[in-house]
Length: 135
Image 1 (spheres, rainbow, N blue to C red):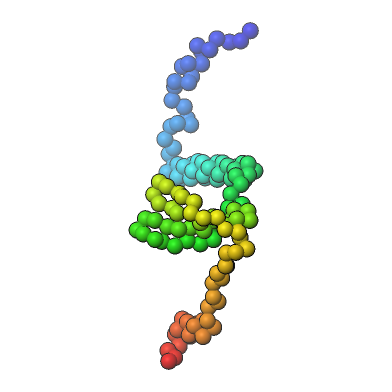
Image 2: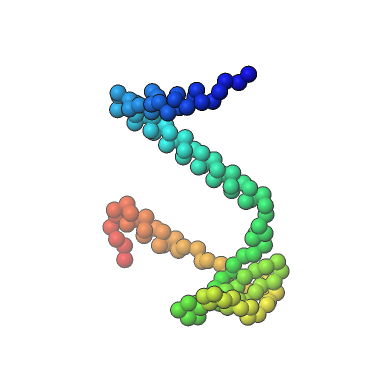
Protein backbone atom coordinates (compact mmCIF):
# COMPACT_ATOMS: atom_id res chain seq x y z
CA UNK A 1 0.00 0.00 0.00
CA UNK A 2 1.50 3.37 -0.99
CA UNK A 3 2.37 5.90 1.66
CA UNK A 4 0.27 9.06 1.83
CA UNK A 5 1.68 12.02 -0.09
CA UNK A 6 0.89 14.56 2.63
CA UNK A 7 3.96 13.37 4.58
CA UNK A 8 6.19 14.61 1.70
CA UNK A 9 4.90 18.21 1.81
CA UNK A 10 6.98 19.32 4.85
CA UNK A 11 10.06 17.71 3.32
CA UNK A 12 9.56 19.53 0.02
CA UNK A 13 8.89 22.89 1.67
CA UNK A 14 11.78 22.68 4.12
CA UNK A 15 15.01 24.37 3.03
CA UNK A 16 17.38 21.73 1.77
CA UNK A 17 21.13 21.64 1.56
CA UNK A 18 20.98 21.86 -2.22
CA UNK A 19 19.43 25.32 -2.08
CA UNK A 20 21.46 26.63 0.82
CA UNK A 21 24.20 29.14 0.09
CA UNK A 22 27.54 27.33 -0.20
CA UNK A 23 30.28 28.38 2.14
CA UNK A 24 32.81 28.50 -0.68
CA UNK A 25 32.24 31.16 -3.35
CA UNK A 26 34.45 29.25 -5.81
CA UNK A 27 32.17 26.24 -5.61
CA UNK A 28 29.20 28.47 -6.33
CA UNK A 29 30.87 29.88 -9.42
CA UNK A 30 31.83 26.40 -10.63
CA UNK A 31 28.28 25.16 -10.11
CA UNK A 32 26.92 28.13 -12.06
CA UNK A 33 29.42 27.64 -14.91
CA UNK A 34 28.57 23.93 -15.13
CA UNK A 35 24.85 24.74 -15.31
CA UNK A 36 25.49 27.34 -18.01
CA UNK A 37 27.55 24.82 -19.99
CA UNK A 38 24.72 22.27 -19.77
CA UNK A 39 22.15 24.82 -20.97
CA UNK A 40 24.37 25.95 -23.87
CA UNK A 41 25.03 22.33 -24.86
CA UNK A 42 21.27 21.68 -24.90
CA UNK A 43 20.65 24.75 -27.07
CA UNK A 44 23.43 23.69 -29.47
CA UNK A 45 22.04 20.17 -29.69
CA UNK A 46 18.53 21.45 -30.41
CA UNK A 47 19.92 23.76 -33.09
CA UNK A 48 21.68 20.84 -34.81
CA UNK A 49 18.54 18.75 -34.57
CA UNK A 50 16.44 21.54 -36.10
CA UNK A 51 18.90 21.91 -38.99
CA UNK A 52 18.84 18.18 -39.66
CA UNK A 53 15.04 18.04 -39.60
CA UNK A 54 14.80 21.08 -41.87
CA UNK A 55 17.35 19.64 -44.32
CA UNK A 56 15.53 16.31 -44.49
CA UNK A 57 12.19 17.95 -45.35
CA UNK A 58 13.60 19.18 -48.68
CA UNK A 59 12.31 22.72 -49.13
CA UNK A 60 13.14 22.64 -52.86
CA UNK A 61 15.07 25.91 -52.84
CA UNK A 62 18.07 24.31 -54.53
CA UNK A 63 16.26 24.53 -57.90
CA UNK A 64 16.04 28.34 -57.67
CA UNK A 65 19.19 30.39 -58.23
CA UNK A 66 19.59 34.18 -58.48
CA UNK A 67 21.78 35.00 -61.48
CA UNK A 68 21.98 38.74 -61.09
CA UNK A 69 20.09 41.96 -60.61
CA UNK A 70 20.17 45.70 -61.07
CA UNK A 71 18.67 48.56 -59.13
CA UNK A 72 16.25 50.69 -61.16
CA UNK A 73 15.09 52.97 -58.38
CA UNK A 74 15.56 53.64 -54.69
CA UNK A 75 13.57 50.54 -53.72
CA UNK A 76 12.98 48.77 -57.03
CA UNK A 77 15.13 46.09 -58.66
CA UNK A 78 15.14 43.90 -61.75
CA UNK A 79 16.33 40.39 -60.90
CA UNK A 80 17.25 37.39 -63.06
CA UNK A 81 16.21 34.11 -61.42
CA UNK A 82 17.02 30.69 -62.90
CA UNK A 83 14.41 27.99 -62.34
CA UNK A 84 15.07 24.70 -64.08
CA UNK A 85 15.80 25.49 -67.73
CA UNK A 86 14.16 28.91 -67.68
CA UNK A 87 15.32 32.34 -66.57
CA UNK A 88 12.70 34.65 -65.12
CA UNK A 89 13.11 38.41 -65.33
CA UNK A 90 11.38 39.75 -62.22
CA UNK A 91 10.57 43.28 -61.15
CA UNK A 92 10.89 43.48 -57.37
CA UNK A 93 9.46 46.32 -55.29
CA UNK A 94 8.41 46.50 -51.65
CA UNK A 95 5.44 44.18 -51.26
CA UNK A 96 5.31 43.23 -54.94
CA UNK A 97 7.06 40.89 -57.40
CA UNK A 98 6.09 41.03 -61.10
CA UNK A 99 7.22 38.63 -63.83
CA UNK A 100 8.52 40.81 -66.67
CA UNK A 101 9.78 38.13 -69.08
CA UNK A 102 10.76 34.47 -69.40
CA UNK A 103 13.94 33.41 -71.23
CA UNK A 104 15.70 30.15 -72.01
CA UNK A 105 18.71 29.53 -69.79
CA UNK A 106 20.92 29.04 -72.87
CA UNK A 107 20.06 32.51 -74.22
CA UNK A 108 21.25 34.37 -71.11
CA UNK A 109 24.95 35.32 -71.21
CA UNK A 110 26.89 34.38 -68.08
CA UNK A 111 29.17 37.00 -66.60
CA UNK A 112 32.16 35.69 -64.71
CA UNK A 113 34.22 37.75 -62.30
CA UNK A 114 37.59 38.78 -63.69
CA UNK A 115 40.58 37.40 -61.79
CA UNK A 116 42.54 39.80 -59.64
CA UNK A 117 45.48 41.27 -61.46
CA UNK A 118 48.74 39.67 -60.35
CA UNK A 119 50.43 43.10 -60.40
CA UNK A 120 47.92 44.29 -57.82
CA UNK A 121 48.57 41.24 -55.69
CA UNK A 122 52.32 41.85 -55.83
CA UNK A 123 51.97 45.52 -54.87
CA UNK A 124 49.61 44.70 -52.00
CA UNK A 125 51.95 42.02 -50.67
CA UNK A 126 54.84 44.49 -50.83
CA UNK A 127 52.86 47.12 -48.92
CA UNK A 128 51.74 44.62 -46.27
CA UNK A 129 55.33 43.50 -45.71
CA UNK A 130 56.33 47.11 -45.11
CA UNK A 131 58.34 47.46 -48.30
CA UNK A 132 58.72 50.56 -50.38
CA UNK A 133 55.92 51.63 -52.61
CA UNK A 134 56.42 51.05 -56.34
CA UNK A 135 55.30 53.45 -59.05
